Each structure stands twice: as C-alpha cells, then as structure tokens.
Length: 119
Image 1 (tube, one colour):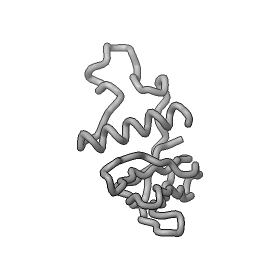
Image 2: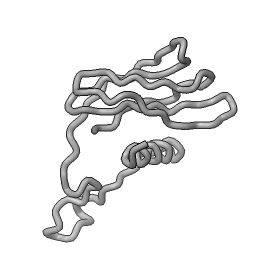
Image 3: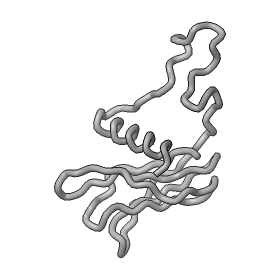
C-alpha cells in the first residue's frame, strides 16, 4: 500500500472516530507573512474534486460502494463495519474524472461511509 493511501486511511479513520473533519493545513492567518501556502503537498494546490453521492452496492463479493467524481483523477474508499464492531477502510480502483471507483468490503461487513480522495 502506498504511503499517501495509508495517510488517507488514518485520516479517514480519525475523522470517523472523532466525529469531525481533520485539517492538515494551518489557517492563512496563522502563517508568518511571506511564507506562502502551508499545504502537505509542498505548496501545490490540490485539484478540485466534486463527487456524486456514493451508491451502496450488493454482489457476490459482499457489500460495497461506488463513487463517481469529476475534476481530477481519484480513488474511492469505503469505511467498513464488521458484525463484531471492527471498523476498517478499503480502497477501490483509481478512476479518471467522470469515472466510477468501486470498493468492496469483506463478505460479512457493511459499508457505513464512502468517499474519494484526489490523485
């Protein structure tokens, strides 16, 4: 698993557990003057990504989610919940703008949230 996917998985898990949204960049007012942007990508702005509401999928592989986004390439993710209470994150295929990423959970797990990360 590539590093940025691990960071996204941890961020998604922490946001889910904390019930809020995490922000990795400092607000502009907190930056010293003349320092520019403080993004995790070294100052490059993240591409805009607009996604439709995720769709619940059922199949022979179990339960999953499909996500369709526009604006840049993306990878779908799903937060899965097993009957014993265990939560985990799965990632789907990488898709181009306008495409669909499909994510599957384990056979007995349910999707409780899904979305996409740019890239």
